[in-house]
Image (cartoon, rainbow over all chains, first blue to last red; front, side, top):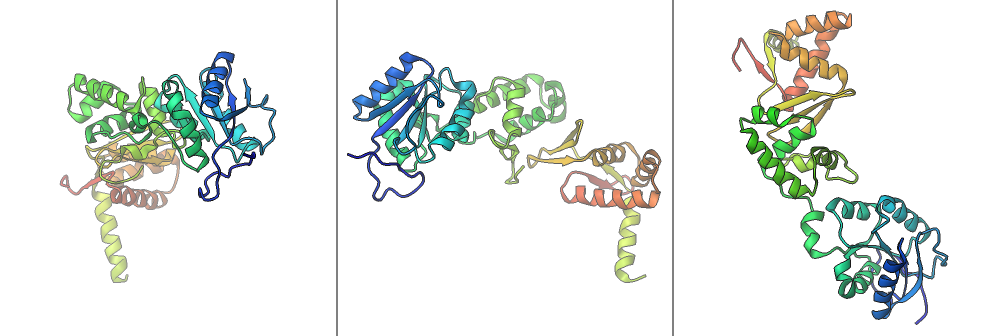
Length: 225
Length: 108
């Protein structure tokens, strides 16, 4: 089988299976673990490096790139942007031991074509690479609710909206004629659905149209934000 | 004065004598660069520039739209006729979006 570049987002006709993959991972143990998983799946590891800059491979030599997010979370946006710029034809996948919904959304927004949890590397990494090489975006099924816009009740949307514009629990309770404990209970449910831990994270998630959900998440009767 | 102008003048006169209030399903909060208005019934956000934000505050505070215009003209040192034009357009815009209610003679 000869090495060839794979175009992203085009039809699968005439496309061959992925063959050559690079691994970007900060620590040596993680790099080797992913590399051996790839090799067991019959894929060739063209390079494994701690950074994109150290990836000394020709632009046409890679079919896909796997980025291990553990240890690289802070730089993930830059990493995927750099990969897109340097290897535009090779899909980039992210893996991590665990990730918050926000981290996964950020990785996808930054240009990742798929995400695989560490626990599923053996069975899912190679198929995910193959699907990504066919132009698909692939995430674990159990993360569906975290990637999709969470379903908030009308009351939760009202509470969230008021949180976003800076109302305290007491003010929200007064405006909506609720007990403060009820507002807290709504907030707890909202935080769980959004995968956030604080009011400021929730507000950020709503107000950031690029990486968050945007104010449209608050629409109650079909209106956008 | 044409029929259309008479109708416009009558509407304007009614609005000036009315009381503008933010309904219960609308909340707003002024920030440094804008006032964010949230319609809790629809979940829609609206942003007002600082002048719009100030107009809304004064409209809520004053008894009638006419009083709000006088107060804003005084505050901004602008001719009342010009402020009247701006405030009436602003009220009609907010009314269309369901962000204020107009109470005529104390009735909605």
